[in-house]
Image 1 (tube, rainbow, N blue to C red):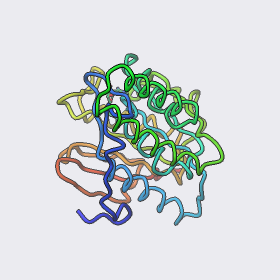
Image 2: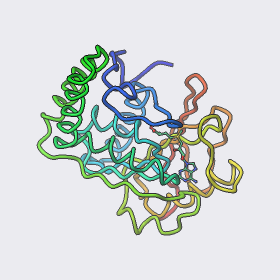
Image 3: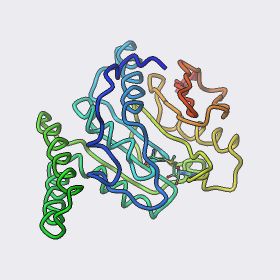
Image 4: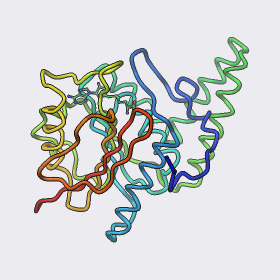
Length: 248
Ligand SMILES: C[S@@+](CC[C@H](N)C(=O)[O-])C[C@H]1O[C@@H](n2cnc3c(N)ncnc32)[C@H](O)[C@@H]1O
């Protein structure tokens, strides 16, 4: 695939799971360059429609918020608020910890934690983590205001009151369960789950909102109330960019 936005293939080791970002068993990470490409593509669609930053970003299947935290560090100057939700209540504290790293307070706490580990264990991996944490902290210093963060538990295939939790979102990016490490945590088949997810997102999307769905390449991402703006496949992943196509 030709990258159009994240053109430079940078070294993203500062974003490695478990280094500065927290991880836990059963969670997944996401290719950082691809996350940046998808975010910038969504942003370019908004700009073409005359919708300028700051943006509200939402991931309704956020897991440990690795994807959101990466975007927050790389493009935080554009982002005003991040909403993150997942059906798994045991994962939301991890999402909260990772997204808290986007604040001065959160990254300073993490730096102190890593410094303590260096003192206790003198491991090279901890010294590398400290360098990465300082690099990530420097990306926050160019911002005048922290991103507002809200994490909550929600089954996005069932939540008919999503608009009680979220005022609205300009960009919705979500990496659907693939069925290997993580599954749809509901009694529905994939087709039904995708339909219900897209039905429910209409509560918080506007006509200009851009929705990026990352799925297995064979999953059909189609819904009568959305138009497909773009679709591309990279490796085993398919990225489908949608916008609502009804009067909201
Ligand atoms: C591929 S993972 C997402 C990983 C995430 N992008 C990250 O960066 O950490 C898919 C997530 O979907 C969640 N999930 C499964 N069924 C769900 C549902 N019905 N509603 C909301 N989230 C769901 C799983 O708990 C899992 O965390």
